[in-house]
Image 1 (cartoon, helix red, strand yellow):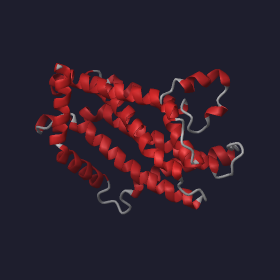
Image 2 (cartoon, rainbow, N blue to C red):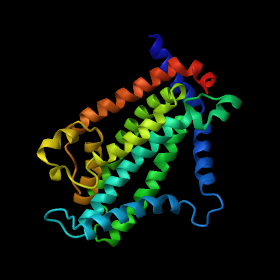
Image 3 (tube, helix red, strand yellow):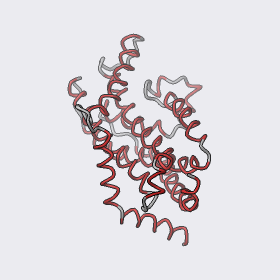
Length: 269
């Protein structure tokens, strides 16, 4: 019962500091775009531009198409996949370095240290909602208005963010003590992107490499975005069960590791 009490205590502390977390998310969002004439549009334009460039090169130059679908299908598939991956990558990357990035605040201000990754989580979710709004407008322009499949996106967002938060926080705690972790994860994340069916579909993967997709927890999460946004299709929820279990386990392990390491965290910084 002792670990459970400690974890529940951390959750209670987060609830008591909820106004601090929400205020920090708002301040971070406003500060990121201070003195910028386009403000939050820059956060939306960057991933859209990346998806547009990939779509132009892969579909127009290399002639990649989705079978039995119209010309706009591949850009939509690509934007859906990059949106899902972008949410994961932002939460994961920032959680890996969050304690080092805010080491000055940790040493000067008294607040639950777990507030920092929660602020990262909330900020990434806010950015993602704005991005999805912009993607919806682009889809209207392409003749594919948002459909009923979009109603499943909150489930996908929750699972992606939990998976990224749990894994990122675990590695972020280790990164405080072993600084090479952030460098290694940066390289592995690039490889992971290309092993995930974003610029291609699972059906296009050669049979001998399908096992890489099968063991990739991000694959079914990305595919829920692609199925919902492109096909208006609800995925088989049973395929998300193992990923949901992994995400919940990672969050639980991250909380437990944080409880054990929190006493030494500031000293290691």
